Amino acid sequence: MDLIANLSLGLSVAFTPENLFYGFMGTLLGTLIGVLPGLGPSATIAMLLPSLYALQPTSALIMLAGIYYGAQYGGSTTAILINVPGEASSVVTAVDGHAMARRGRAGPALAAAALGSFFAGCVGTVIVAAFARPLAAVAIEFGAADYFSLMVLGLVGAVVLASGSLLKAIAMVIVGLMMGQITTDVMSAIPRFSLGIPQLMDGFNFVVVAMGVFGFCEVIVNLSRPAEQRTVATKSVSGLWLSKKDFKEASGSVLRGTALGSLLGVLPGGGPVLASFASYSMEKKIAGASGTFGQGDIRGVAGPESANNAGAQTAFIPMLTLGLPPNASMALMIGMMTVMGIQPGPQVMTNNPPLFWGLIVSMWIGNLMLVILNLPLIGIWIRLLTVPYRLLFPAIIVFCSIGLYTLNNDPFDVYAGASFGVFGYLLHKLGCEPAPLLLGFILGPMMEENMRRALLLSRGDWTTFMTNPISAALLLIALAMIVMVLTPSIKTKRAAAFQEEG
Image (tube, rainbow, N blue to C red; front, side, top):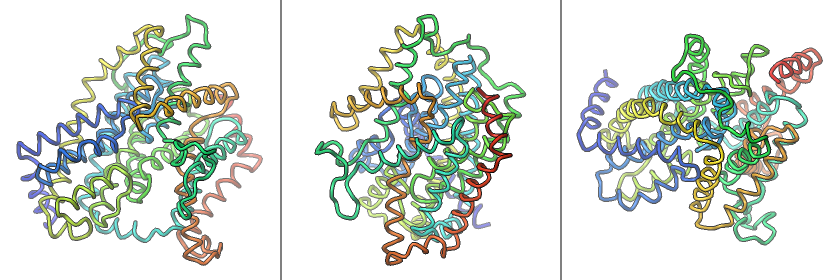
């Protein structure tokens, strides 16, 4: 009964004309931000903060939340159409989503992403409403050792379930981890591997790396082909909606991705990103030899998109209930709440129920707004595929360059993105997947930070990773995955499955 009363309060707050307007503006802006490579939600929220201080706290938070989870929707659009992930969580979507676009199935890919995101977002919001307190209690049980082991499991999953050579996948993860070491040491504040270049003191921005190995690389790969093959879609575009077969295949992936994303999104530190990679690995494992992952399997779009959107919703749990921001965007939201006189943490739910429940109900409304905005746009996005490539590739280059320059207003980021484009092309020629590299690059700094924190807390005792029950269980699962994939029978089956995919 308390939940019903609280949701009724939330409805009365969220359905005011003012909050509906700011919710709509947030979701619209978030979609555009996701579509535009380089301009992420964190940068946009930072730019908007000064102008939002004049609003009521609930209206401001509703708009910022709309920007955040709207960007998760929009990030899949460019990932599918032109192989440029708008958001970190859309990297995996690009693998099969763009392959579907090249086969003339961009419509079903975009529809699966939109509908999967809508379902996952709604379920994630229900979980936030019903289980915020108990899930927050679970999340707070995770210590530094547990986070380290969780990330080790994520990297092992990326290696085991990558297409092709295990050795190449391991090499990509290691390269990604090494790239993540180019930064300023978190403990001593001393720059590492920056070669005296001031721009590298904070390391490479994820957008620079992703836009290079996906966006610029895609252009180079296309230009290396004969002129008649330089197209975004190698087949004519047919069908803008899901067939019965697509719906049947995608529905299970959406359910599994939603469950996984809802769980991982609660954990502070890259939950939606980790959820999308984990979902893709899980779908690939479940499909086995019957899957066509990497060649345009709709399950490789529906699962990760559902996972990252469910994770984006449940990521509000640690922010609202514990005052712990899981990412930069939510750190900015917490900063705004503090300036407005609202103390983030457990007391928000009891001291300011209109804000807490109004925000939760606004997420349902926002997800509905997003699907209404995105589904009619599918036909418009599809028309991009009919543009001759000689006109499209300069636009992609200019678009990416502007996005990279606006990161820090520094041409260095543009040059770095172009360099990573050449590097991505070399990886393409060598038959290496960029996705494990990016996962290693994203998780590397977080792994190091949590490993060092765990060792500091245990006074240098490495057994802390095995004496902690959660950490030990995660490491044992990772070890079991490695042992399984190295057994002769599974190794043979895996090689045969990927040979069939090729």
